[in-house]
Length: 506
Image (cartoon, rainbow, N blue to C red; front, side, top):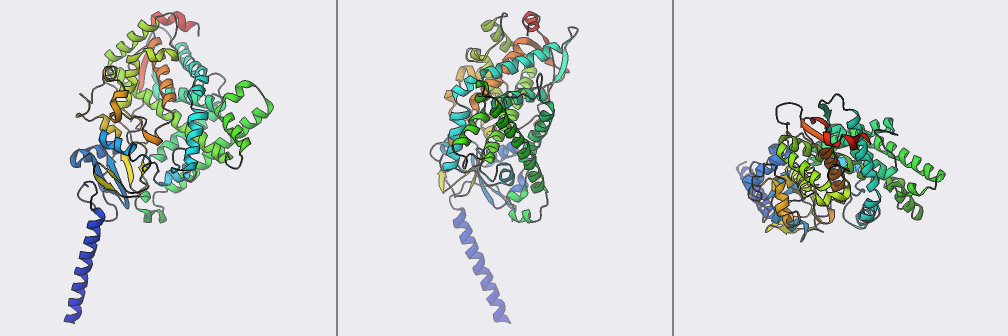
């Protein structure tokens, strides 16, 4: 018995030292890591919403390059410009993959869409179509009339709803969403969902789809990090995602069929300017590759990415301007000095309005639509900040933390659009990356800046704005993929007396 007891003790000690040695070797050279990593769940117990703020606190405590264990999934968290630059330059190809997550599997057609496809020939093909066929400078210029007409339609609607010379209250979140959806939908399929000649039934369906998409995409699925829990289906997220994707598929397929039928019955030049037409023409040349699923996936990426993020940025911008009325006054003074009172702002004016551009950039700095850049994953082992990053590690770049770092920005919590007039954007390098960087940077940056710039400029030029109460606008962030406001913005407006003549002619 004694011999057997000593045998077990010796075996236990041997296994302990072997496991310790293996773990030590496995962790050798990794970035620093928070203490209190628990079995199975790792550091997940440390995370609270909003996630970007929690991760910023961890980085402040442990360093700008940090190793975190999300259950079984290793994560490297980046919170400095130099480390971000290293990831998106020297290691750009290494970090060009996307992690496999449940929501992306169902909503990204098994990781085959532009946003979630792994780096390789298929993704490069998607990127080429997006940057050359759909979002090139020539095509964006072609759609400038769409952006202008939708913005003017919004201004006309607000002007006609005005009565008795008094300020009127409006909910801005829905207003901006309707504008961006009309713009993107007209670019994609030549139809509008709100206002005159709108298809309101389809609009209601799609708004519900977009809302549910961002809600479920931003939902935490513990099974992504503790895979064994997927077998129990505790969250029910899998079924919700399958149901949502069925709705998305049905909606987009009906849109494709209607567009295909319209093209058959009409050969008008205007019809062949939409993104759907481009994709359907590609299908004719290579139907095996450009399938209906391919087209649905591309259209859903354009619609989802092009509506909610731009609408959210405009809502944050108006909130910041209402809380900083001196900035609102400066923006209006600049527009009036450059354009005057005899015409309305146009897209070509935006480059001549540096303060308005500063308002947009400062909004993207303070309230980035993507506070944690879309996650990447390393395809092979590499080095970041002198630390070893193993293959299969998820990369999270906390852009919110970088853009709020007092070591980088003077008074980072203050809204100061003029800082971009002094520093510009080009000289900021990796201190300011609201649209990401590298191969997987957002291809819709130019479109977003045009839509947001024209809409904000028009609203500032044509209307006086003030808060709906004496209190400052609530700037609390809600949980979600695109950092929405917890409380939708209610603002009060009335036409500027000097603009009444122009507005009455719309």
